[in-house]
Image 1 (tube, rainbow, N blue to C red):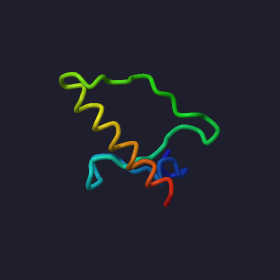
Image 2: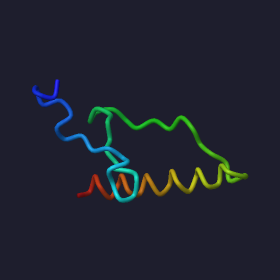
Image 3: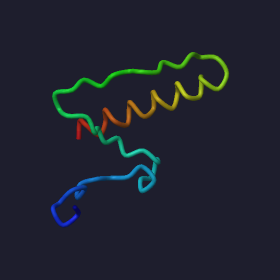
Image 4: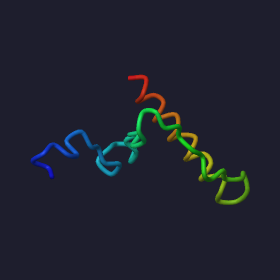
Length: 64
């Protein structure tokens, strides 16, 4: 499949400085769904902050 060009522009989270590449793998006309909304309690507060940070990184990457 590589010889057909599949994955040529793929970036992998572990290969980035922040451990998150921000690539959006959804089709352009598909909205990003939110399936999990962590609370501010316990470890979920850390998860919430991580998701917020990744959303900011993704938005920054999409702006260029």
